[in-house]
Amino acid sequence: MVNVDSAETKTESAETTTKPPKRTRIALIGTGGRSEMYIRAIYGQHADVAELIALSDVNQGRVDFYQDLIKELGGTEPVASFAPGELTSFIQSNGIERVIVTTPDYTHADYIVEALEAGADVVVEKPLTIDVEGCRRITEAVAKTGKNVVVTFNYRYSPRNTALKEVIQNGVIGKVTSIDFSWVLDTVHGADYFRRWHREKKNSGGLLIHKASHHFDLVNWWINDVPERVFASGGLRFYGEKNAAERGLGDRPERGTVDGLGHDPFRLDMREDERLKALYYDNEKFDGYLRDQDVFTEGITIEDNLALVVDYQGGPTLSYSLNAHSPWEGYRVTVNGTEGRAELEVVERAAVESSTDKKTVVDPSATPIEEDDAVRRNGERLVVQRHWEAAYEVPIVNGEGGHGGGDNLLLSDLFNGPGVDPLGRPSGYIDGLRSVSVGIAGNKSLDSDLPVRISELGLGVDLSRGQA
Image (cartoon, helix red, strand yellow):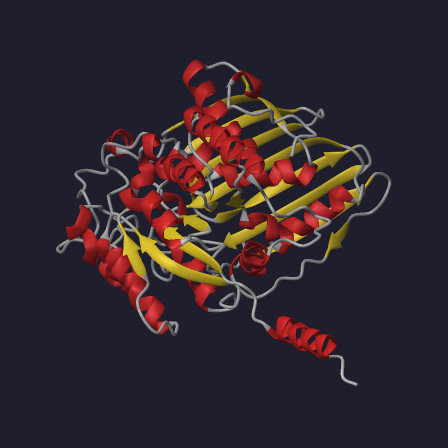
C-alpha cells in the first residue's frame, strides 16, 4: 500500500531543494564611476541572488551609458529608470528590497534616510555621510525603521590589510600602544580630487572624510578600538589658484578637455580615455558637470596636506598624515605593541612619469599598473619583529581583481550575506559612523585649532567600545 502523503511530501521536498534562491530586488542610485562594480557583480557572479530592477541619476546620459553596459553583460532588456526625487514611490511600487547608493557624498544622508523610511535596506559607498547632521538623521532612521545599512569598506578585504589584522588580533606584538599611518596620493590620483566635485568641502567633507574615512576605518578595525579625541592640522598648500600664483605657473585654463593646449602633466583631457569621454564628457549637456576642472583654479576649499593625532578609548594613539601631491602613491603603517612591532609598506605606483604613465588610471589600488623605477618598485611588504628577536616577513597572498582580490570578497559578503568571519570584515553603519567621526572631528579641529572629543559631537548614537 502506497502512502500517498509520504510520496507527495518527498516530491515537494525534492522540488524545494532544487528551487533557485530568491533574488534580492535592487535599485541603484548614482551612475558615476563607482556604480560599475555593482552592476557587473549583479549581472555576473551574483546573478543568481541579485536582480537589478532600476537605475537612477540626475544625468540621463550616464543612465544610458550603463544601460548599454547591461546589454553587453547579457541583459535581455533595459532595466527601469526613475528620477532621484521618485525614490520613495519607486521603492514602494516595485518591491525594492535594497538600494545601492553611489552618489556624491553630500547626498548620502538624504538617500539613505529616504530609502530606509520607504522600507528598503541600504548599501552605501564610503563615506557614510559628511557631517554631524547627516549622522544624526541616519541613526534616527535606523532606530525608527529597523532596516540595515552597510558601508562598503573594501580595504578591509585587501589581503595585505587582513594580514596585518591577523598579526594584531593573534597577539603577536602584544597590546597595541600606538600607530603611525602615512598615506600619500600621487599627482594623478591625488590631483583628481581637486578637479571633480570633491574639491568643495561642502560636497565631500574634504579628504579627511571622503578619502581618509577608509584609513580611519582600517585603524579602528585593525586594533578593534574606538576613536575618542582628535587634533588636526593642515591646509591647501599645493593645488589651487593662490599656490599656482606663488609658484609662477601663469594663467591656467579652466578645464583640461580643450584644444590648443600644450603638454601639461596636470591636465586631464577626457577625450584621451574612451570611458571618461563616454561617461562624463559626452553627457555634460544634461547637467553641466565638469569632470576635468584645472587643479590650479579658484574655488578649491579642501586641504591637500593633513595631519592628525587621534586618541583611542583603549589607550593607543594614532599619528596620521595625508599628502595629495606625492610623486609616488602608497602607504606605510607601523603598529607598536607591548611585545613588538609590525610594519606594512605598500607602493601602488612607484613613480608618475608623464612620458609613460597612463593618467586616466586614477586609482592604482583598484587598477594595478606596473612602473619602471630602479629605486622604488610597486609591491607590498609586512615585517614583524618581536622584542629580543630577529625580524621576519609575513607572506601576503593576493587574489584576482581590484584591491588584491578584496573587491570580490566584499561583493560576496554583500550579495550572499556574510558568513562567520573571525576577522570581522563585514561592516555596518556603526563602523561607518566611527570612521567619519574622526574626519568630522578633524574638520572641527581645523576650524577651531583645538582638540575635539568625538563624544561631544552629538552624532546621535553611542560609539563606545562594546556597542554593535
